[in-house]
Image 1 (cartoon, rainbow over the protein chains, first blue to last red):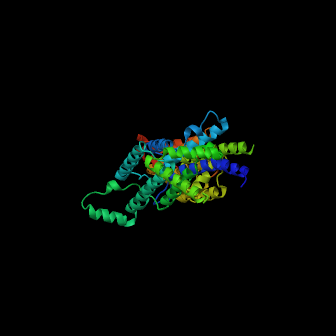
Image 2 (cartoon, one colour):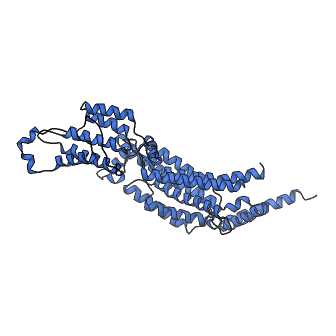
Image 3 (cartoon, rainbow over the protein chains, first blue to last red):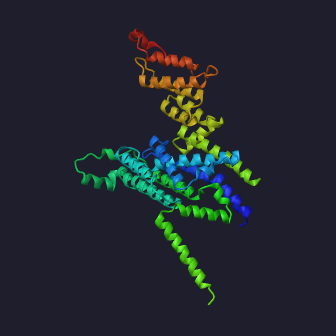
Length: 258
Length: 166
């Protein structure tokens, strides 16, 4: 692939594909399908998901998944900054709607899961981890919440109560389970949510930490690697350095003239 | 040059798509068909289905009021046509009218539809020239429906049974 084609593809990804993916995730994250009428319901992001999105974006900045200072910079042209601001705005709303998509609609589960998300994101503000690990951690977080909402809790709304309802009813005999139930949505809601999350996580995986990093020549990439190495926890950094040293010594031994 | 073009296309596309997302959340259509209807309203290309409207009018003249309203609902799903809303209000009036007493629930729905017709024809007074109707303006129809809902001493007048349905 020529350098020109590569640059065009990167520009298309950054200026067209990423905003499209994030906006689609933002659109689908709030879509529900009513169980009885099969009517579409559009749920705008509630306040708690906006707060969660702010925490998540702060985490992206700390984990260097997104280097905001390099996305929006005085050194760039106005059009480029506007385009980047739109992409970051779309990322914010996609994050809020991704949370909206996996948070239960009402009742005790919503309170518990919201608190769980808030606690996890708040705790992670003080940990050190790299972008790749952050992405994996977020995928796991959304995956867990998705299973809780669309597999476990939706079983409560299934006709006849579902297996979880019967299990919970027998375990908590005499205790009301009304606090567990939310509005009933059709099974299609889960598929829409899955697609929204897949788009969101896919978009995050495609998102470069900084637009400048894409055009780095070899020297720039080396600088990026050194920077990434610095961000690793001490033990892992020592492990990488040890491995590199061992490989270098092996290569040196292999080619040493006898 | 190509890079700059992609940038501008990206900006335009993102703004357009974001506007579409915001519009969808604001309009909250309940089905894909409704998305189409509301989009045509927003674009100013919305039109009433004439064939369905006429089918509804035929039912109305045969005193099949509920069926007529169902046809008009399909003819004007966005409820944006003043004339159709006028006929809907009229159907509530005729169905709810009684020689001894009126059906208040139907009259109330009639008032709502008449008000909707008035709101949709805010620029000029709505007048429907239909020889089968005795009331031709939305304001007059609303007043008639409202008078039917009001409780007055005149309600006790036994001569009321000789009044005519309009």
